[in-house]
Length: 185
Image 1: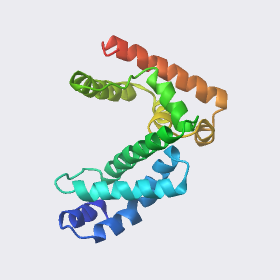
Image 2: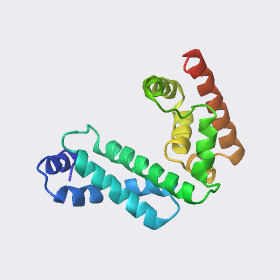
Image 3: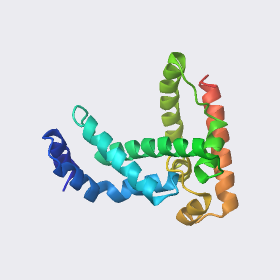
């Protein structure tokens, strides 16, 4: 079933929308959650939470790209779950390592002034990503959006571990310079 038909089911409040969403996007959402969470039960719970969030938000929202919308919801739910688990026990997972790497460049703020800055930052990061080569952008997004392991990136892109580390390091430095130039750091 096409996404536009699935969205119509949401708008009709037809529970079949959830079944069709799982058929169409379930594996994609699970893969996003799995990159962040280590436990399959947590992955399943996270995907269910994302589906509930979709059910609760459609309508009034009508996402242009249902897959991307579900991916964003899943990622958000997985990060929330990861943070809750991290509070329970501190650890050095792949997510925490990726988080630490990117937090060196992009600080996590709170408050109204920080919310405005966050919107400016989001736009600036989009412009930055658009300026990268396709390979650089894909490696960067796979690491910092999907939280893929370095070894997974090596396999996916056919690069050595050293090349991936070097590429990510250079790209983070480029991002830092870009944000400084934009007066956002």
